[in-house]
Length: 311
Ligand code: FES
Ligand code: ZN
Image 1 (cartoon, helix red, strand yellow):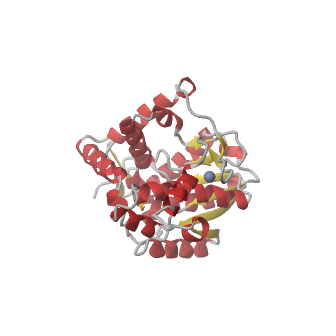
Image 2 (image 1 turned 180 degrees about the vertical axis):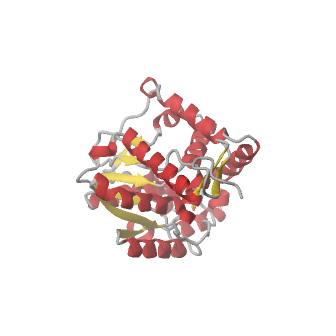
Image 3 (image 1 turned 45 degrees about the vertical axis):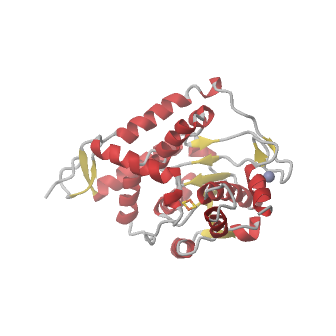
């Protein structure tokens, strides 16, 4: 039996290859939660969240449920309220299962939640968008529409509910993938802007933070399982069509061959964020159609809806 590298007494349940250590259940949970707490503290949220309403944007997957679980656990200590928001994109064979998982989770932990239908709110669901894309009627991938619509609706619903902060379940792997995708697109402004906390002083923009920013996806899965949390392991059927899917597999292969790769990329990303002020980035304005914050004359959501309405 392999014993925990920290306490040396209990059997190890998690191997952190990048650090060359194995941890037992107790030490792993403590290590995990401490890292999340340190992240919140480093973002200046220790006292800032007091008396506030925090919305957790959740898909019903392990990372967003972990985020909900952790923020629910810390809410008395930090003194805030939480609300879960799930956007139903209308993806059959996937969404209904994840939605049930969220409902069961919120029932169990007595968390209020809101489910928002993309079709009811914006007139389109992602199954329809995917069909139009397959038929060559639009030059848009389901994922790019889904990401834009989901972010838009989470912000909109949070505004309606009087939310002060939005928390998302992005983990270290997501951040590294986004960084590489921005690199491939040559989008330096996004490479230096995106971090664990995003705040723009503009009406209608709700500050967002990412409690799992420094947590590798594999550790998020271990935490989820050790806490006995449940979600069906179904993946969105359109995920393999996205660039993210390709990048994720590629980085996982590199990480396997060279442990610590993801951490090194993240630390490069952190380093680059220090030059944020030197990279010109477009400022926010109000969308001429819907009035939501955007960097364009017409926001991407309104633009896509116009495009879809012409098909
Ligand atoms: Fe589901 Fe992209 S539309 S992962
Ligand atoms: Zn708009």
